[in-house]
Image (cartoon, rainbow, N blue to C red; front, side):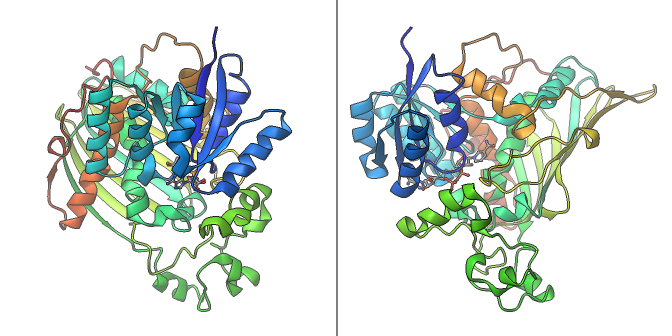
Amino acid sequence: MSKKRFVNVGTGGRCEMFIDAITGAYKDSAELVGLCDINMGRAELRQRQLKEKGIEVPIYHSDKFDQMVDEQKPDSVIVTTKDCFHHKYICRAMELGCDAITEKPMTIDQDKCQQIVDTINKTGKDLRVTFNYRYSPSHTQVKRLLRDGVIGKILSVDFAWNLDVHHGADYYRRWHRHKANSGGLLVHKATHHFDLLNWWICSSPETVVALGRRAFYIPETADRLGLNKRTERCRTCPHRQDGSCNFALDLSSSKDLKELYLDQEHHDGYFRDRCVFSPDIDIEDSMNLVVRYVSGVHMSYCLNSFLPWEGFRVMFNGTSGRLEYQGLESPYISGDGTVPGERIEEKSHIHVYPQFADPYNIELETGSGGHGGGDTRLLDDVLGERREDPLNHAAGVAEGCWSILTGVSANISMAGGGQPVYTPGLVSGIPEANFGEVPQ
Ligand SMILES: NC(=O)c1ccc[n+]([C@@H]2O[C@H](COP(=O)([O-])OP(=O)(O)OC[C@H]3O[C@@H](n4cnc5c(N)ncnc54)[C@H](O)[C@@H]3O)[C@@H](O)[C@H]2O)c1
């Protein structure tokens, strides 16, 4: 059997999961034939790391992307750049005859989303969006319970996601802190949550109303904490040096952070440790939404990124009961070498409250590894042999679109002071989504 050929564009923190899998567990069926980045220092680091394992992979600057595809003839391009460039590489890969696999969010606004949809409709190429959260065993379990009608037909949902002062704060240090790069957290992060919700209730957003603001990661908070001598970044900040700032990040404290970011910043000026209280941040940290779905379900959702614990609470209200699902995740800093978002099992649960009967607990199905055990199962689905998928885990362009369009609508709503936005009017030609059997 010939091996499937992959190239990767965007050689930062996230690409490691794909590179390790292709050159490790899936090496008999997959081959990494090129790496590409705008920062050649980071690409060279990845090349060196592979060479130490005896694997030779050519590297290309991002302005040589076409040349890489021409020379290496990949079947599929894996896109792990910063979010605002996903559409560029997805579309170009397809125009050059490749399929694409993209990290979430598929893209950050309706115009880029339209470009992706148009390119797929024109080229007929395939896009996979890697929603690892769907593959976390307990998220899958909730999908199955709802599909099997444990609470009847779902009428409404309360959904709250907390980001903590480790992982949550990290978004304000990096490129994510600007909407032009990430679409803000309602796109960059909540694409996971809105995708889960679409998949759980088997529907897509119809109308979105949102309010949001940045209320914590602001200069006034730092002043209140007595952090009055702050500089542009932690590296030069006296509050990191004297230990007075709980939000300080020392890039030289971790081998991974140092090699990946600190040692490469002279190539492009990407500082990974900017002050989380900078006035020039333009993303929100507190967001509230009301969403009506095409199926008639109503959802209230909130996202806050400055909290003492990280995880979620989601409550489904159905015609015959209520299901409450809570998950706590381990604190981490993206790219520091630790496992991201491990589930804290003893603080996670599923409770079912039937109407007119006693409530009961359902034992949580668990998995180990990144993102509640979702990363490993996702990789198996994307890189392994095709298997039966009765719960429709695999997400393509349609699911990628609907996962971002709730957040994109929310951004429009917030910019207009909270006016309702009709989501299906934003992008045309989206293929039919396949969320599976509707819970009855
Ligand atoms: N599914 C998940 O759980 C998960 C987790 C982490 C990150 N991600 C996603 O992975 C992507 C990468 O995130 P990350 O944490 O690795 O960020 P990162 O900053 O570590 O890496 C981004 C890389 O993209 C490169 N890049 C930037 N602009 C480019 C361009 N124009 N052309 C080519 N390369 C360019 C940067 O130099 C860098 O190497 C993001 O889209 C993020 O949302 C997903």
